[in-house]
Length: 398
Image 1: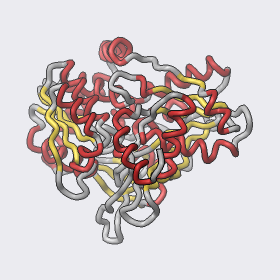
Image 2: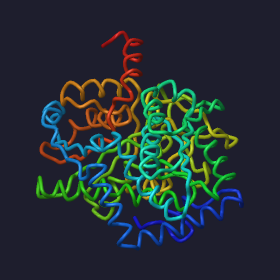
Image 3: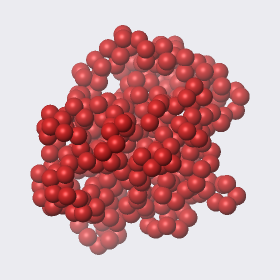
Image 4: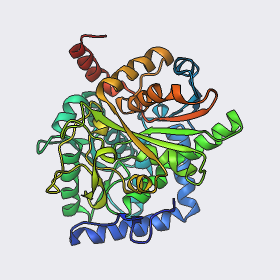
């Protein structure tokens, strides 16, 4: 798939659907990004921080016990959970803070659901001496107490959002309102491949390091490309990061795993690509969960980072082109996969990543023996342990 056109469209998806007052900010950001991405010095600086600060490259780990349990493909985990701050989000926030510094911005704002993007934004802002406000729904604050404390320790202000469902969509709404009133001195770090152009293109650029490393590592380990790539999808940045360097390899299948929640009824899931339809949300056209009148539907997932009614326009395009397939995994199935990963591999995954593991447990046995599967372990599960404990207690299990 080619990058978006000059108007920010991936096929029919993308673009800029924003108030006129935001156009100067987006045009300034687009200019700064295009200039920086063509500049060797910017790339060298970003690569330095990714290597020396984040700890890249991270391993592509052969999950031997999980492979034996599944009984089909050889399973490799791309260990984004081992990054500084514990997830893939830092790849993007470092790049965007470097851009903010080039534009002379002194203040960073962000939205967060699972808290990992908020922590990564607060981390990058602290490292560059910038003020940072993070918008977070009250329900997610309840679920993600540890990450809220981490953000505060890093010097960020966590701004509670008590409108709507009090989750990621509502936090994004408030962050957008802030940016409209403050873009002269503020940069908004969108945490996924969503939002108006150039954000989907820009975030994909910063996250493609995941797939670039994985491609090189699997060729070194196995001497060939994988048969299947798997990643969880909320907004979709870890998935695009893994998928993009393999887009032209037609024999490499790609599967994105969404949040099936508690079922297919409205408000019970966040399976946007599986059950949504094209619409406009947060400044771009993509698949959206919405009612017959076009109003955004409420969503649910045990994983706060998947609790979003939209998805990136690149994923919408990949679905339309049938280049990537999308499916969903429910809360109970993800929770079971969370426990199995902990006990079989000694890895505590993020609940978001557990959705991708659950897909492998479900579909892996149908794959040929010794086929190759690469999954993005998008984050670690420290942030989720209290929520998991509560969910397990509700189930009556441990």
